[in-house]
Amino acid sequence: MNFLQQQKLLFKKSLKLKSFINQTNFIKNFSTNKFNLNLATNSENSQKKISVTKIGEQIEKQTNLKDIFAVVQMGGKQYKITPNDLISVERILADVGSSILLNKILLVGGKDFTAIGRPMVSNVTVLATVEQQRKAEKVIVFKKHKRKRYRRWKGHQQLITVLRIEDIQFEKPKIEKSRVVSVE
Image 1 (cartoon, rainbow, N blue to C red):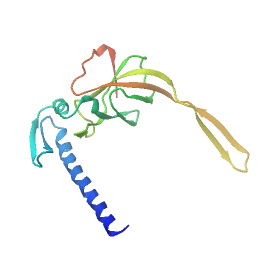
Image 2: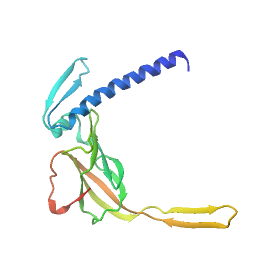
Image 3: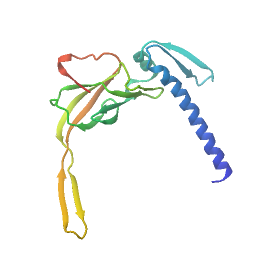
Image 4: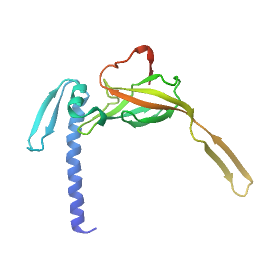
């Protein structure tokens, strides 16, 4: 790598670092109910300060709801989801067609913002419906000790639930409590 390539690489890293610092300043203030957000306009390089009182209002002003994503924790695993996604998770005891409310939201983001929970993002829930209860593809477990005539062949199929992500909601859920199963 010559000197010019090294300089270009350092310049790119410094630009990424500046954008990361701007995001972390936003993230530090996001967990409280009232915070200030710095926005740079394209026409001017000056920054405007906007006072926002609720997370939901901020997100609606920033992006379209179709562009929002979230990271949800279920069954010890983390899933990046957007509305209308299909995800396969470990089995949940719920009927097909029932609604599920996911409470463990680790991160919410969009084109213009990212909010990281410490450890969870408050006032955000994800509404999902159960599409299927089925088994995953078969996994073959084969053990062999060479020169010992030891071979063991086992198969395993994990029980999984297929969920369709309906909506990412930023306040209390707007659905009847009798139809919703809360999943921790």
